[in-house]
Length: 369
Image (cartoon, rainbow, N blue to C red):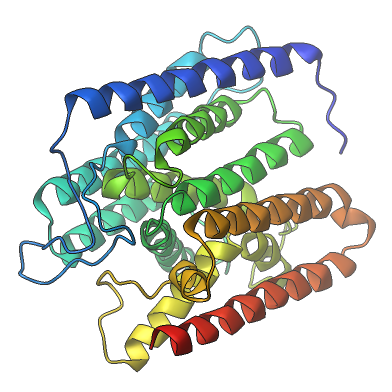
């Protein structure tokens, strides 16, 4: 379906995006000037259970303030929707509650963790609560046709994405760049579906603007980190977006059981978080190490061990994110013309990306020891 949209939404969204980006940059600047000791983290910070929390690549201690601008812009964007001169849908109350409840829970849980360095089970409990809020309000992935299996799969998805974004927040600019790419994919899907004037477009544009305003201070050499308040907020929001927009794409009406093609688009859009988290988990378990503790063993770190500069690693991640956006747009726009071809293209892209990352991971591992 080709969208039939007037010029007005593009003008309004463009102006809002520019203003929101500037607003986010100003908020981050003021936070840096006035708050110097919230959630300070460096490579050797300690959690309250006595274990080293080696989550940062840089050695300098910097405040974890990015989540504040994300959450503020999110709330402003939710409110701004009702002021738009165009609206094509009214959001169901249960769906709105699921969105507000889950992302707010993610932000608060992350903020507490930033402030008090809580043990991993605290964050895990918060992630489970986010998943429960979504499924309880009817926002879940229909992957099997059986509710309790769908709820279990949705919980795995929400917890997995929240952990994946948190784990990607390990070098300057990485997590924000990956999240920006996923949000661009979501906005593109809304446009191609003809839902460009709906509620979620302005919400995603607002959070994307917050990420751009944050990247001004988070690009290497960074002045601040997003912290768990930012990564847990983003993880909940991106998981929610995936459930609503990505998972239903290739599941035809009337299909009641497992349907493999609906797994294709999530694998493309969330390729980088999937691959990084899976790789880290497998190698840590092989070393008999807890996969939930921080460390300098992520895929981005191993690119640095191979000789890439911090800026080069961030640019490489941005390039892969841009390719994922292009593949997503191509698939959503042309899938019906050849539904058997695009799963092959997506699988080839994912395998190529996976093999390339594993190749550099092993080289970096040998060089780093």
